[in-house]
Amino acid sequence: MRFAICNEHWGNEPFEKVCEDAAACGYQGLELAPFTLKEDPRELTLADATRLVRIAHSFGLEIIGLHWLLTRPTWMHITTPDAVLRRDAMRFGQNLARFCGALGGKVMVWGSPKARNLLPEWDKEEATKRAAEVVRGVAEVAYENGATLAMEPLGRKETNWMNTAAEGIDFCKLVDHPGCKLHLDVKAMSDEPTSIPDIIRNSKEWFIHFHTNDPNLLGPGMGEVKYEPIIAALNEVGYDGWLSTEVFDYTLGPKVIAERSIEYLKKVIAAQK
Image (cartoon, rainbow, N blue to C red; front, side, top):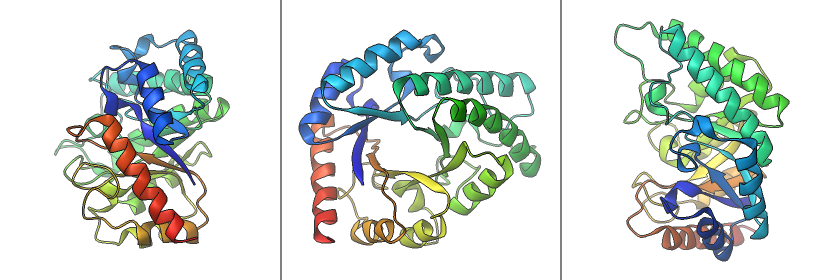
């Protein structure tokens, strides 16, 4: 397994600073949130991708993909009955897929809770079918550009649609495209009744990416979640992808979070060899 970190931890810092800190801490990859790159991510270009790749490579880093896909513009939605909003979401997602391919990224983590929440009057089954149509349209373009969508189940505090890994797998089956798989996130899995190691085992045929964090919104090892059984389960199912750290409380500062997270993960992994 390799170590990556999400760039939004650094706020408005220049991309060079993000890369410098991440590389100094021992990370090998960066996961990018499009809204951090331009105020309106619809304006991202292939030239932007070329510049970002050049900077990342100068620090020995890979850009592994994208996450927080539908944060901006804020009106986009995938479960809504409004066909215009769904169309906008699909077209924007397709553009991001091309951008991800130009970055050399292999994964697009589809979380974006506000862009999928259900209103009480919507039928959940019909809403899920609508979402599958949007995601399938993006998955097709992602796959053509060497990337895969990774659907992210999220906790009940974040969204009322797709809260468990099992629901995520069912959705991937509905999309029925090789460019659509599952993503697992420790904070989100902590909201499930099933243990995290068992979720990993039950999802082994589907998940392609993994976020490390804690329900307290900080990094791995900085809260109550113990990673020894998590790493053991990842090893058991043969996961050899990225451990990508995504936190939501930046109070300690990005470099402190980055350092403490990777040091903890390396310690846990080393103890199991």
